Image (cartoon, rainbow, N blue to C red; front, side, top):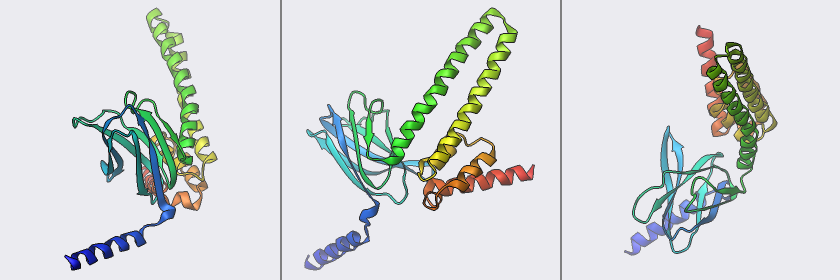
Amino acid sequence: MRILSIILTALFLVSCSNSNPELEMNLSGNVKGLKKGTLLLQKIQDSTLVSIDSVAVDGNPNFSFVEEIESPEIYYLYLRLKDGTLREDRIPFFAEPGEIIINTSLKKFGDDFIVNGSENEQALDEYKKLMQRFADRNLDLIKEEFTAQKDGNDSLIEAVKRKKLSTLSGRYLATVNFALNNKDKEVAPYLLLTEVYDANVKYLDTVYTSLTPKVKDSKYGTLLESFITERKTMRDSL
């Protein structure tokens, strides 16, 4: 038993010495109304969503995680209730080293939450507000198109289609410009990979070239570089 205790202590000390405080994300928060359950911290590994840590909640709705973040990326907070059932909604957030706070409620988990402390998350929120304008514009055009089809107005239908294409083009250009303006954040390559991956490769390349060295070396920066190379190879083979 004494030998086992020495070995376990040694392993603990080695694990502590290998940790890097500069890379640690201290995630904390509150799920209002949650009495008992388990919060799961998840991320995508090899194209699969996996749970990397969990914390039990029993009476106190506050929670905390400490996770080493080698490169800022999207993580998810998932909830398993006390009866073992899983909530359908997840809370996505941009994980990065430092203090991050997520506040939500059991009733609106996944629908209504606030994330503070992440610079990339703040930029992502700004992007979502920008994109809402294009979403509202597209909704208005869908209504116009429906009315034109109902009235059999072919000329108006064609005009609306041109407006929709113009709105789509505007959304793509706005995304590229947003990424260029946030070239020092990992959210820039993330948006190109998830929102405008089918844009002209020259725009993707322009953004990638402008990224800071740190962001180029990040998870999403590396993925963007590989994606651009693949797109160019496919283009040149045609």
